[in-house]
Image (tube, rainbow, N blue to C red; front, top):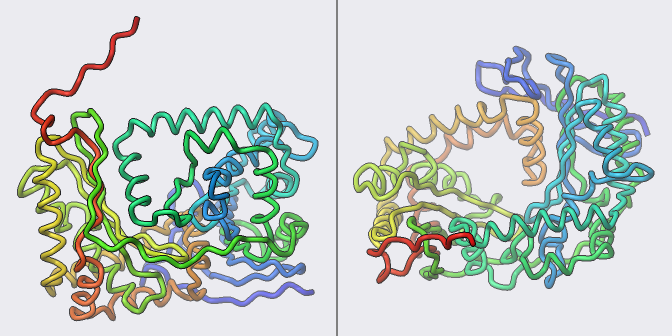
Length: 455
């Protein structure tokens, strides 16, 4: 099969050109040309060729992620992500990392809710070795027992720290309340009970089911031509199984608000996590929800929640709220922290502001200001080749068109005040799922217990 490329010119940033660098932030004056590249072996990637600096950034993802962890063993995907670069083929962990370090190659993996993904960054002159090391990591991981136990101990140490971290506890409990026994309700990095039970067979089974070409999505930005990149993609990914074996994941709507959960923890500051059902990425109301969410809690110092909770009442140092969308569900979710004796007042203030925007919607000025900000900030979020590669990968995972960057500002502009009000009612009209982590109300007036003295 010959190399096939279709080109779309992305007019990023209006009159300004998109900055394209990998690790530095010096801008390129060339507009990004986003290409759909199909390698001789049939592997597809979204590709931006940029010779501003001799660097290449690649982002890639396989369908699956933490949702493919066995129900009784959450954390398998997270363990795999931590172990794939711990030796491969005839290279043990030390030798594998020495080869990465010698050429300043950055290779990493992670397991999100719906995808198993990775990043590869290198100098142009080291591209052959970098892609070959990635090929080895994906196709021939060693999973040596000493490496497994070392990584397992690291994960368990992190989980123990999280067990006394109010924000971590609140986040876990919120997903449990929202999704129950659905895969989205399980902790992606596992539990203190599940991680010790994960075996090498579990790791190899996960790789066999998830790491396959049929769900592979790739984006590449940097100093490489299309012909060379096509050959590299075939060598790197061509030997993987053609099809994975993913367990089906059901669509799910988060639990209906209002609900409230409390986790007692003897700490001076109480953490509050709040949210509820969101809007799926392909819902017609998504962009309206995205814009009005910026007004409520995503606008930093200008958001309604920030002004009401911090500036007017002095209840918290920060408060934010954002949309979260996955393949099978969507949420809005927010977080704040406050003094233990003012937790109830803080929750009331958040609920009051949520209720107000649900009933009234935003003002026309708020809508206009939000649109102006969102049109500019998106381009700034893609101002290096690494960020652009990440953005292009997410667009593919969200099943957006290759020319989405060209269309996005028009979609933002098209949101009317009525659209924003309708989205506000949908998102916030039911109230909140709220998780509070801290000291019980009756103990809030007392000082926190001193830590035990070491013997």
